[in-house]
Length: 321
Image (cartoon, rainbow, N blue to C red):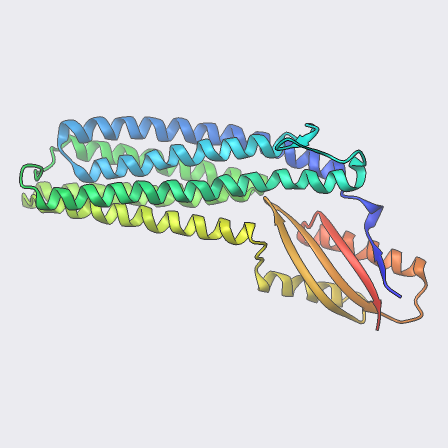
């Protein structure tokens, strides 16, 4: 005989509301990101134009991708936290919100991942423009020029602001346990390093009076943006394709197998719903275990996985050993 049990028979609605509340705070932090990136981009674009620096322009485009990224994440975040709406993209929710409806509500949290993936595509498109402009500057003599000293100041300002954004995103992401903010902190730290590289490239061009160094540096910045965009797109795609880290699943399995009444874990599959993790597991128990005992065992497993790993929902299938 096969039993399928869930604790309380439903996903805890209070957890969903807490998650939506966290997403509202995340939106506030993302607005700060938009403002910071906008200020940096405007400063760099202006100084790149008057200072004749392709590298600074490339760094400005890199930071422009940060604006696009934050706006897209804000949009996905808004959709994800709107849990009181009665439909998902025009599709009505089931009347039984305590069971099927709550499951469908988790779909909303995927939008954060979808818009993150779109961000990766935007970054790749921007990188192509940057690399093309860099090569164009190398082969067209009328574009070659030594940057003006003012561009060095612009790169320095950008680096300092990006370090502030990195610290803000990192502390906020860890506090709220939000993967989007943690990822944004890595992106902003990379942007700070890019601005540092821009400073070094401009400084080298000024010091050695080399006209081609600015173009080469802009190509390097473009390739860096391309690498970051591909990585974001890859990670988001794996998330949407229901890929989960096998090492993490092995930890879940080990924790469940330590429970005395569990003979073994026959199958285990973890899933992402945005930043929320859900789990499907099949366990084997003694063939003559009472139905009531199997129910309480499933309840114990769900409570432990939620407490130990923060897994919001665990579906347990019980089969006889």
